[in-house]
Length: 219
Picture (cartoon, rainbow, N blue to C red):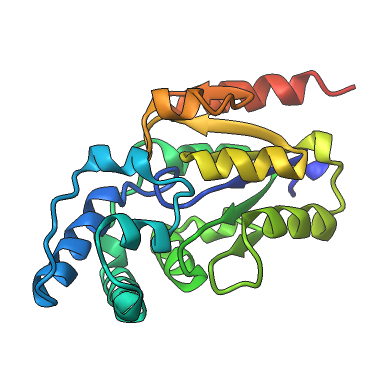
């Protein structure tokens, strides 16, 4: 039984749980080639995304607004059909299993919730997740954080948002919850540090240690 008195841990999906950046860029290049659009993005260009959203990625990739719906559909269809090919971040399965014993876990993603749930289910990880918000839910990440806090009736001081982008940090700070950044995702450690998160982690086991200490410090 989950002892969720320890708090609420909300995690981004792409970059934090799955290593999807290269796959998304590959599919973006395929889309641009099909539509005779030039493509020159690399993983380093992801630091330019502020906020880190699909519309912003389409913008810096040079995809016109009129083609955005087709682009987002291509990505959804590919990621849904090839969910099992998107690798989990090494060690994240163990982390989620361990955290769920003491914390309520939720996923807040700019991806479609169906894509997220399919991949987590394939990895037998949905059993650890109590809520999943995607771009198919009304509002952005700030709204989703607020909804999760209300839904699970947990004080903001006992809630954390774990993300790999400047927009994740912004959403946490604007929501009044702790902003925990991880450097193994879409944006670099330097880009994240400049946004001044509460903590910056480089390996999943560091997150585990952090939450173990937070739990032990509870009165």
